Image (cartoon, rainbow, N blue to C red; front, side, top):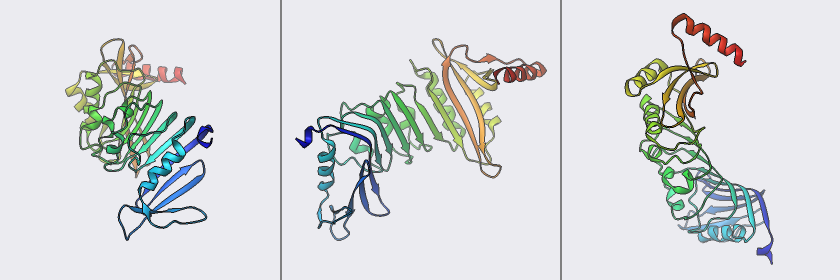
Amino acid sequence: MERNVPYRLKSVQITDDQVSQCCRVWIDGMIIRFDYTRRRKDFCRVVTSRMSTLDLPDKVISRCILFYLNRKDIHIKQLTINKMKWPVQRFFPKNVVSLKIITARGMENSLRLLKNVHFKRVIVDNQCDTSTIFEIPMIYEAKYLMIDTVDMINEALLDMPLVSAAKINQKMNANSTFIDFVQKLIDSENLCIGLKYTATSHDHNFVLRNLKSELRVRINVRKTNWKGRNCLTIDMEGEKELVISWYKTGTVFFPKHHVTAQVLNKGSSKNRASGVIEHFVNVYTSLRNN
């Protein structure tokens, strides 16, 4: 009877806390903690607000997940996997609207075992520069995909198929990080309108002029204006174009330089005039849009 009761859960979080040496399962305010024991490997203690068990095999974590989430009628609005390997092989709860993954080294191997699992929305916070999580179909096949990642050592992000209007934010340590991904966008086919890639540099020595010069050497670009802002545009196959814009945030002592490449409908940007005419045209366009 209990398993037939419908579950409507707003938030489920599974966290591996390396500092406190424990695993926490958070289900709509109910917290179950599994403390890893120091004396024996592969054992843990279940800690609740009222009691603590003796040492138990760590399989108790997967049994807890199955007990609460393996239901016939369950709906989860947000499921967060925080730096933890998925504890149950070949099982994943049904009807998860949004999945958020905070990566840790090696955790993506447990997600590869999950087949035919799809989500409407996936958020990836990648903090590992050698992660291969972008190769997993359940990630890149999401209808709405948001990625926040560090600069990658491997080419997992460059090799990821782009099948949705993804929003990708990446920290870059060199200009080649942005230029290589722009080249990937140009070479890709059937890109969705609205796909957006932003590279952010925290380097004080970052020079935007150098990035644009390197971009012009490798790719044929033209000077344009989009929404009152100077930008560069690359023509793509079909009725699409790739618009590259830039802006700066942060402070004088801690600046952040952002360079964005976005797939738009052809004709969204307008060619810029040259010299003094360009200046007045840009001023007029900016005033008109405001």
